[in-house]
Length: 99
Image (tube, rainbow, N blue to C red; front, side, top):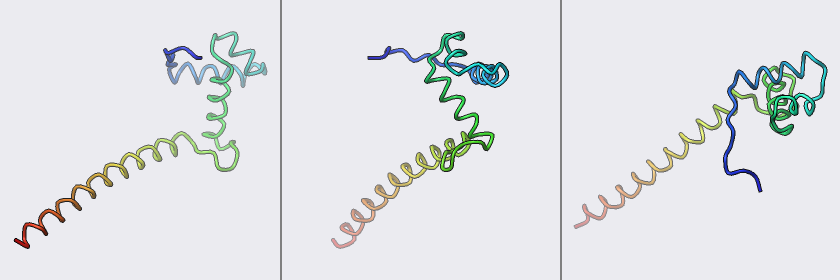
């Protein structure tokens, strides 16, 4: 089991860690050990940075695309709730007008 505490790294720290991998030619695992982060985390940051630079694999979303997808999903959920409220209101008022 992992720790119940998640360490949040700043965007600057992540960029610096990625730059270390790029500039030193050392492996992600070596740089991660030196910085005290998990290799899996640094590997994920590195992969996402490559995708953001247009060097990712087909189908991988850039950070901007991921952010937009999250926003659109949230907006979709809010609209679905609004539609449900309006539907219930329409049913209620239709019953009221039949009286």
